[in-house]
Image (cartoon, rainbow, N blue to C red; front, side):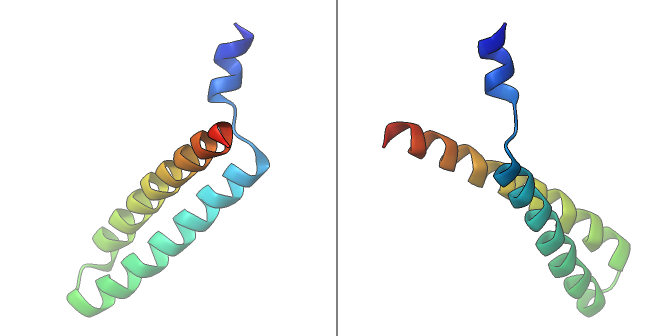
Length: 68
């Protein structure tokens, strides 16, 4: 049971990466929305892509640090 909790636990650095990913994604999405139109749609798309990219980044960092 503790191994499962260890796998799904998130460190302070991962929280920071997720927050930065959301902020960057929402910011870029808003700018794209201002240029193209439909700001709300691009705001949401940017937020989702920010979360996904930061989780992928955290996943790769977690596994490369275990191998080193």
